[in-house]
Length: 423
Image (tube, rainbow, N blue to C red; front, side, top):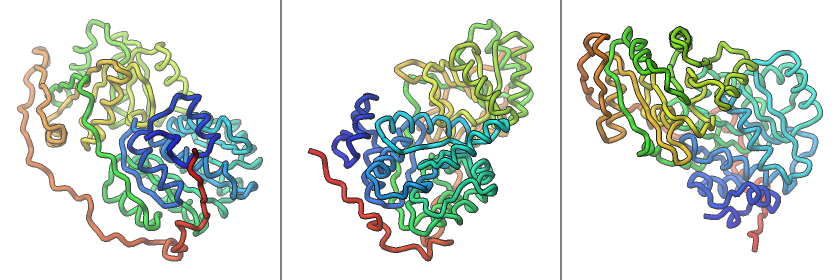
């Protein structure tokens, strides 16, 4: 389906034309009309499917069409990380190039006082769209810098990641400040019980759009090393012994392991840098810039960069730990083999992680090649395939909770969007 077949206004279509956006992705095709019609929506789709445009385009189109207060915050976009907030802000600038009078500001933590003061000035001058991390937004709210009483659009991007990072209470605190008659849009890469519960609390009679998690690209050469936890650093040394690897991301679920891996690679003179939540925003920006521009060969990171960060020339992804969900595995290794390139994905499977790895193989529908452990490292554990684990997803009734029990049931038509199809 072509963007011109939707009810997006001409200013948005002009920006898309300049950006050479023509055909919609499946998530955009299913979400844009529903959002334009004023429905609450929950979209389940993995990174790289175009979901940022799926919510930004219709919301910006409606704001540009008018009918919303000029002196109020009209839209909040919540992001789990500073990096994703920055990326959404960049997309906002591109999509909104021809929009007059639609302003935006990005607010996120980890900065010095000067950045906070700049955010405060931007908020007090008025902004139609605020792109924010939960903690930073709450800080501005508590200091009286933002009034959300007339908000029209509340958007949660990467909602599952926000809950994983402990932002559930922050999100609920913010939601209690919103007017009853607003439109809520939620996107998540996965749909565990906690996301279903959040959706029941925040969304009213939502449209559900689910794009199946696609299998990793065939161009990704997947393999694994069976090893005990103490052997993992030895495998790292083996992989980097010739010093020829570059454009590599190593993922670990814990920042302490990221630090250990970084020290080991630096000890053998590998040009590397680390990315985790202990770094300041300026340090994280600098690391990402140096990696994107090729000044750093290897990035060792927590899952903070597994989603929503676009780097097209990654040649190898190493999973130092086995992701707990098959979807997370797909997100991690999906950083490589992009833009028509080939890629390599290697996973270290300890004896404690075999059940999770066998779940991944079951999801993929194939066995992943097991590489022999270097002889100097000793014996590897025997691979034991686990029985399928019972899913706990999808339990519980539908219903809705919280303040939405008082919400206007006729909301779908409450703003009377009368879009006329373009000839």
